[in-house]
Length: 533
Image (cartoon, rainbow, N blue to C red; front, side, top):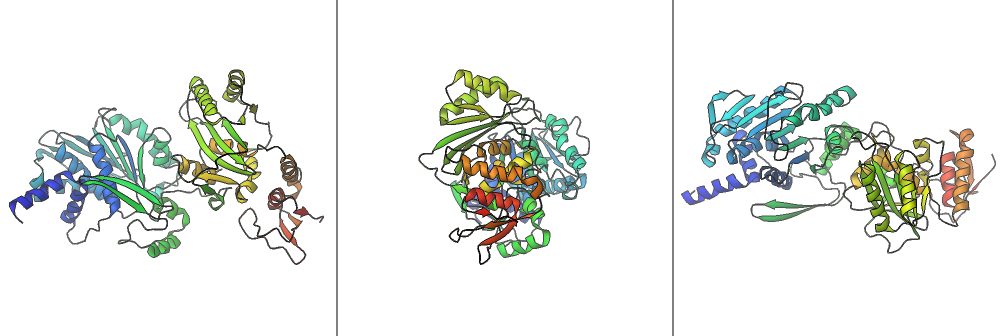
């Protein structure tokens, strides 16, 4: 290689973090080939934005064995020192041994000839321990565990790599301790809250894990990559050579050269759906089964041009303090018996801001009905909107039923294909998670708002709806865990129960189903009749 070519290569390694990662892997483990992939470029581009100060809070969710530690905890600190030798970096893991292992490799990288050939940064001879080493320019890399002491250790950049061990995440106590340590201890270590940056690198482990905890409290840039694409994905990656567009189609593996779809499906069978959904798909599920099944949800790309009516449903919080419930408004377009979710509002705000936001949403969508739960803040919002607007504002009908019973009463609308969600919305994943995981969720505000909206009845539909409600509410108590005989008309087509299983009538058109399915079917098709036992 000529001198010019060598210098050009060094210039690439200095300014292209993805190339630096690839060269780092070869330096630290020459015997094992490093399989490059587009997701490494995506993560590298995000970390370059952190280095430039364009991203301050970044979460990277990756499945196991996708090079997350070598990228984030080994190569990135060394790369940052190459550009900012005076930087103060704090690298944290769940255990000191894990933190030290990454630190040792990062230190070895900075001592290598390849690194010294592209950067002028040098390690100091004064402090060279694995847990705490310095550069000659005053930069410092500290390694610590979340359980260890961080007092007095400030940083410009904090990297958290696996904050909790997978074996510990099922413990409410250990999970709560890990989560609380972030704001109690870690966050305060930033030298400059406005200019410092925090990077979290981990696989998802639980519906209430570290990622769930911090993203509920502030906005983060998130790169979340399932090992098998659940839907078509599009990524725009900024590289030193221009913008690269990546499309991954539904069902494709994240890194086929490393793990094929067939291999991953076999892995799913071995580890089980619960572990696979969290650690590999970055979509943790509750241990308990949800009431609303994911497969019941339908999606639209373009909403109908007009609706029979627009419904806005408000579920308000009692206080605006952090940790309390959210103020949620879902806006629905109703066409016939179908409900299209058009917008979701979810904020913790004081009442004056809530009132302003409610007025804005009302004027934006011009709803036929605004329905508000008449409790605490909801009463004040109800009065304010009635006083200051000419919209049809109503209090939600009072009910003695619990949240679970109210959602169960709307199962037929989901199982019957009457609820449609947008294909794309920044809030969609959060909404879906709460809807399909309830009641095993921290919050239920979006579910409550949805159930309230689905309870509204269009003119002319009262008979069918009342008939369904009478069946489920009045007879539900004595029919629970019992079965009902239904007469199914021959032209009813294929029908399913609330679990999605096919209902097969006998030769006389009689089907025996549980009482909840009976209520749902009778509501969907008034010609389906209950037979006396």
